[in-house]
Length: 455
Image 1 (tube, one colour):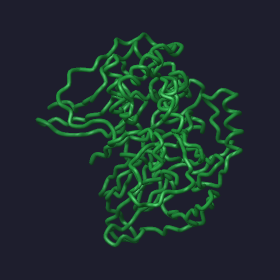
Image 2 (cartoon, one colour):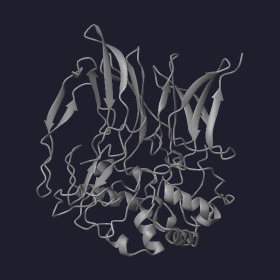
Image 3 (cartoon, helix red, strand yellow):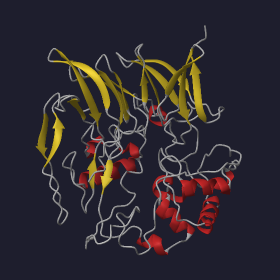
Image 4 (cartoon, rainbow, N blue to C red):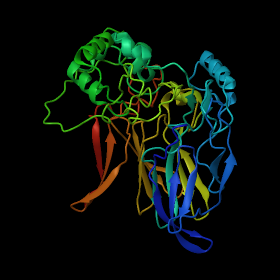
């Protein structure tokens, strides 16, 4: 109901519990909970309580009456949001007042408020808490580390199929509004941190490269395989004619797609976002296979669209992301520190904000007590595993969304970090196109390798 699937990998470690060494498996969640089980018996290490949860108001829908709440360890993320939590930074006074009114009017009964025909809000949200690749452990010390982000999700269901218009209206502006606008912004100029602006795209990207990205997907962007060459060309021309964002940095040379060998497969899952075109047997308005033959399809359907997440992820005040250390011998949080710093909020006096959109930032824990983690603010950091203190930083050519790797070759130790994300989490919320000041724009995007000094 909330897209609260468990995306973070479970972690294996050994802890001291009730005076005994116990092999455990620890599972973090998008809700901000950490569940710990004896991995031999499957029993929770500490009690998990089934507590009453709000009822669904949708016709014919019965939400499960309880949800599981660990009693130990404590949550690692914020789990409530009210109008009083609206961000005191970055937003204009008008935006701040509008968000306060909007949040105050929502159905907001806590973490498991079911979606309905009126807006509901959830924190950490469907992309918050602990997401892909966001955990690591020191297995012998009983210590577990997570990175987490607080990013509210807004839900609203509707009887109107959001793809109905898209199936018949194929104009470039309609295609952009239906497929691209939620992430890339009105008129190709995004609002806030996120994917790059697309206005005046022809000055930065060649048509063949644009076509590859649209057809095959890129990063978080899904593949739009149903758009034919004519539709892609029209979209490219439409975006190329839009005014670029104010204050855009000098235009980079147009990039062309390089010569490629045979490609077996690329992009997202087969089918991508499929236009329904009158087929009432699709699972969701976001595409998918037909219902199995002979199955009973619902007579009344409710839809949701791309508006699951606020287009301003910073509507809540900082910190927006953190690194959290758990001591699972005691079932306590050992320390919690912000992951990075947002440049624009810092300029307004904010401290310890954490970076926006920090959902994919995995980490490495070494046997010598270091935690290496990169973030979308263009930095790689080494933290002390016992205190969370930042011991070393290096600047990357772009934001990083991925897990660092470490290896040894010819007697030297290397750390490799992916640094190619277009996410601008260092400021420029209005889609200015400016590179965050901490990013090394003189370096090419890609994998960056660091090495310990040789002997």
